[in-house]
Length: 369
Image 1 (cartoon, rainbow, N blue to C red):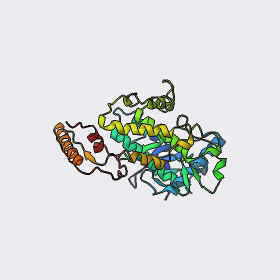
Image 2 (tube, rainbow, N blue to C red):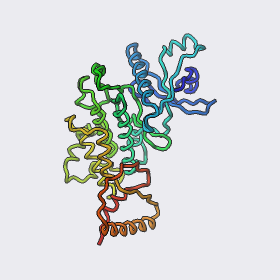
Image 3 (cartoon, rainbow, N blue to C red):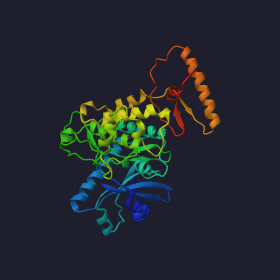
Image 4 (tube, rainbow, N blue to C red):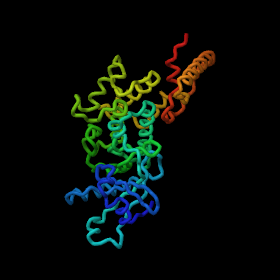
């Protein structure tokens, strides 16, 4: 962990210029910082300023985020990279020190491709279905790291704006200001008041004693519905406004075409229908009003894995390549029908990168004469 001079970070953000503002979290604002001498681009978070008790609370949340991230450092590629904090420069003027007010700045890796919220609700080109499945799995893996840490971490604010993309469009879970370390042999977290974001927060989480990993599972279920439908968690222009209240009854109507719930901007190809339906069913389990029926994040990942494709192939955009591929798949399936039925376990669901599809789904949709 590096120790950055406050003055260097102030200069890197052009004095925390509004033009460098790239996002606002639950307790602070994030700025793009450029260290010209080192040719580095950073993300720098400073606590939001308000009346004294609000500023102190935001400062505590930033300290908490620093503590959580330092405990998770190098645990997973799906957790936002923690680079260090700032310290007050001895050369800072008294006025500057008054502004700093002994609060730290959090320095993180810069995420150039924005948030999942921007991708789903602001981008001109919506993400493909394979990419959405990949995103859903990467988020789940990030949460798994938190829930399987010792002590475990409960994020408490999982939402699309806190899911960011690096230069390779891989997911990074960010904003740990509300996160809580929870030890099985400790009741210290029982005094922490419920917190979260409307639309994502677990309605069962009404008292400190209700804090559990199932709170994060509920929020993840909301994000799953958002990924598939591209509908906001709360949209007052629609009825019902809540994505959960809208989607769950539709999903539970087995005869309803799955396309009624999916992002209307792009069609759902047959080879993805089974996979998307599986994700929707998992989402329903996550947002269940009965906490005890919700799966753990590990069970969710296993649920995705049990529905995975045994093999993956690259699909070339050339139609002739597609025709050749389908013919090859038909031959492969005929051979498999003559061989002993495959009974091994499906390997763990691997990331579906853009331009790749799942072989098992394609085979399931090919009708042999």
